[in-house]
Image (cartoon, rainbow, N blue to C red):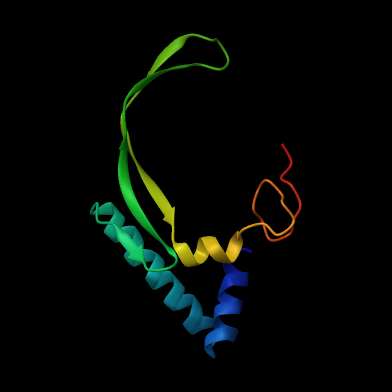
Length: 109
């Protein structure tokens, strides 16, 4: 689902126009981005939480040359899935599949 499809679904579900739904979605995303830029965490109970963490500096390899290179420390956004979202996507298996998905089909490796 892309942004325009999401806007259409939100508009339909909430009884809004597409313009109002797009404005609301943009506003929510802007507020989340600003909070993360200020290094605040954003928690949406049942859905999940966004936070900013620092990835430590490390030594990596250039895939083209194989030479070692230093990778600088940087801040990254982290998302932790909430209980309700997790349960809506994945529940305890009934058919014994290893991935615990609703479909009962094992994940491809």
